[in-house]
Image 1 (cartoon, rainbow, N blue to C red):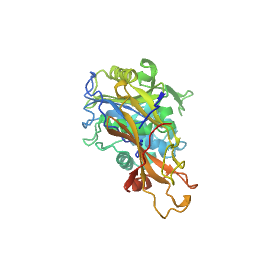
Image 2 (image 1 turned 90 degrees about the vertical axis):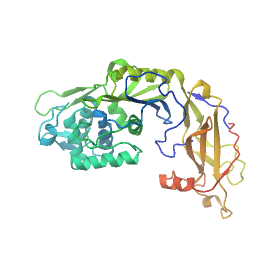
Image 3 (image 1 turned 120 degrees about the vertical axis):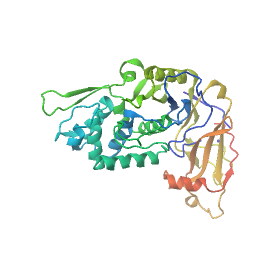
Image 4 (image 1 turned 120 degrees about the horizontal axis):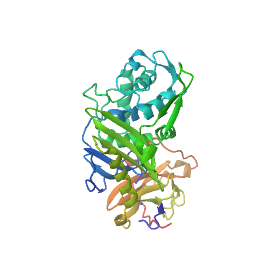
Amino acid sequence: MRQWKQIAVTALVCLLLISGLPHKADAMGVSARSAVLLEQESGRILFEKDAHTKRRIASITKIMTAILAIESGKMDEKATVSNRAIHTEGSAVYLQEGEKIKLEDLVYGLMLRSGNDAAVAIAEHVGGSVEGFVHMMNQKAAEIGMMNTEFANPHGLDDHENHYSTAYDMAILTRYAMQNPMYQKISGTKVHRAPNPNEQWDRVWRNKNKLLTSLYEYSTGGKTGYTKRAKRTLVSTASKEGMNLVAVTIDASDDWNDHIAMFNMAYRDYELFKVKESGTLKDIQEKIYKNRLFIKRDVYYPLNDEEEDEIRIDITLIKPDKKWDKPEDVPNVVGKMSVIVEDERVDEVPIYYDNGLTNKPNAPLWEKFRKLFFIGAGYSGHD
């Protein structure tokens, strides 16, 4: 990673904002009918092919099942395996009716071996029923911006017509999930052992993701999928020199090589730049704001060689109120920093005021300030 030295003032106001900058759409051949590659930190799409077409997705559905289980706070609880779970068709970890198994082990079985029985057991324990859990899945999808997705089951089997997503939406989901350390750990596990109640030895589950286990040295995890109608589906993640990537393919006859080709292209052609370091913003001339403004996170963005001279930063601030007699009167959030590449806003971060009371605002508060009248701050961008 390089730090950008001279820049003239874009956060993910929402964690999942995806850049619309030009990318290598169809510039590289892949076997998949739909594909997308994005950089995790910024959400920038580096490659796409028919990424917004709704398609059947098979077992990459289980990424949503896994993250909901992890976020439930019940990972240490034991789920009781039902008759419905053990009779779910397709791939299985061979659970037994009445068996009590830790939810965490079920999630490992779900992600590493694609156990459909594990998916149903998770759904029933976390959601109260499969139907209740599906409602949770669709709620989460809407919450994180999966606009062209509908879930009808927790495993991805072709037992409903209204079960579909897009490559783009699955990238959004994976990017979201990868913010969770437990999900990262499980997704990136090559082998997991779980108790076997009726045997003297443990169950041993080896990850089906060949990118992780043998094919790609920078792989950090992912999820495989296949049904007769969906064909081969694959989500994978990779990390190299600080740049983390998410790749998705749907209906791909050569998915392993599709993912390797996308990753190699990104690591060859793009570099992750530190656009702005967290901390105090210098060169703010407005008296009430001077030496009191800061951002809470480093701002990174992937750039290719042609874009290095096309990036700038713009700062906009709320017009000071005459009623602000002392620092405590100033709101926590007073503006935004926008990163602009080739005249397009690609990231946006809130600017905080050090009033001695500042806490990170929730999303509604930041949205409120976005709608206020902003004034330019005349920031030069030199550190």
